[in-house]
Length: 326
Image (tube, rainbow, N blue to C red; front, side):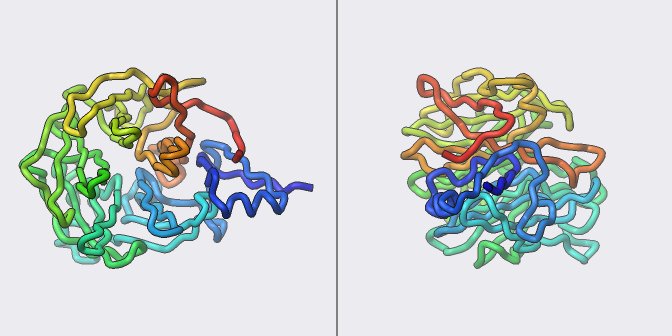
């Protein structure tokens, strides 16, 4: 009799050797987007608005630690197969110093981590709101660590080239150059700025992508072309995603429409984009990651991970109630 493991919204390690080994033992791996996802300790994964990083054979999942409403720092989980996630603890904790920019009472949202090959440092960027100021500050926060699981040391925050910075993501291009893509001007603008060689600051190469009141950027690159999925600005309520494409990360960006397909596609399946993981570009394996926010209990917000397919070279995300590893 086969034992079924239900994994919350993830493209579950397609083509990975560990996955094949599990299959050979008769375990049926089934994906169920939006279901409760537990770590290896049978605790619900708490990593919202997050992103993934692969180093060696390990994947690291960084995300917001959320209480019912409070922002409680940044978590990190580790996995070799994108299925079983081990809680590695708090990557970046809230400061106990009430005067700190990351003290309790502020917000640390959408953390992303990239590795700098030149400095051998793990660099985290996130959207920072200062304690007791609501969404007034609109700053980019930066932390660094020698290890992927941290602990990360908080360095500073600022507005990139004087621009407000809220929802954001990071992207490392083929040549090692890194970019910060961020919502600005009260989220009406979406911008991209090239980072310095150490990934710890911004350069003056800072460009407006478009002014369409978009947030929650998620980007990937395929066959030399950049693809960017974003969300509209409707608070916690879901809305239609849009896809843009470009031959240069600085644009011009072409609107390709809504890439979602299936029930509630016009609401991004009741979710909001956060990251796109390249599992294997040669095999066209990409994961669209989104959050299904529950504003009355943010800790219980669920994860929607779905495979990206392509039609005439354009990415599509097709809803599936459940699906299995091939």
